[in-house]
Length: 377
Ligand SMILES: NC(=O)c1ccc[n+]([C@@H]2O[C@H](COP(=O)([O-])OP(=O)(O)OC[C@H]3O[C@@H](n4cnc5c(N)ncnc54)[C@H](O)[C@@H]3O)[C@@H](O)[C@H]2O)c1
Image (tube, rainbow, N blue to C red; front, top):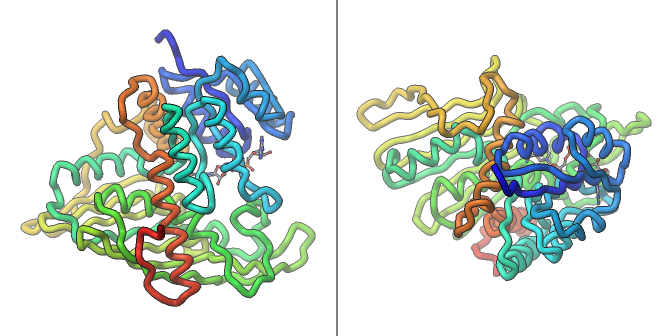
């Protein structure tokens, strides 16, 4: 194909290697022309692995390049730079680039809206790493809901959970998720890190905005072992639950946690409606990473649903690991949306702002011990 979109990737870490770069490599609409990481050697290593011609340690220099169409922000924030994604996103959009960003774009939903409006003014498309709406089983579930399989949706139940940080001795590699904190006030963690994708799915499946939420955050593992063996206080939300009501009158319950026994990625989405129900599980068990089941009022035993081939990404191989399988769909979808033009732009910054607003509202509900009405502003 002529005129491939030219992509520059910022962040050459684990997720870039396992999900983003395999995705860009497989989409016929894109080529990665540059990679940037403040750790130069790591950027060099990824460049060799994925055949990327140019390497940078300074993202500004890469963003300034006129021949780059898309910037991919795949960095990890640190306690010293918590708004790392937000800064890189604004720089990329100001530089006139379409932008894919890992979640969250910004911790405050208002700043995600600002980024969305900037992109709109400049005629740019955006996409957020809301990985699980691109799992073939979730995509097919959405298709069935749009076709009317469940009728009018009544109830959504969602989980995103696994036991990634159940052990207090798990090394604290991911300090953006689990920062040491002595503070009396619990810090939002799982609700944002794990909650975002299942909140996104709940909005997509229920096709309605939330009008109110009430929720709780809990710290189940209060002390964790640091690299030097000392115990440090980590007063973060490692498990949370909220319930909510939609404009349509439907209701939901959502739970997120990384101290609940179970495997990656650990999502379950259930939609119950007037004419049927669907349950999708993305939990890797005995070599299978996605299942979809359906039931009808006259056949209430849930039965497995086969996912049609058209919901799988280019170059799909049976048994492929879920990060590259789901993310290749995400990247290919974004590249196609830009390539084809028009208005199509699912899972963009506007959607991420709505998700972040719910996260901010649940946090408020916990702190004020009451229901919170939406929208917040
Ligand atoms: N959507 C998902 O399902 C999913 C899954 C895993 C990780 N993630 C997200 O992906 C992002 C990356 O995660 P990871 O596991 O690859 O982290 P990582 O720590 O392995 O890699 C991040 C890299 O970013 C680099 N970096 C940080 N700031 C930079 C800057 N200003 N300029 C250039 N490079 C910079 C770091 O040096 C590091 O090499 C995180 O935001 C994480 O939350 C998303």
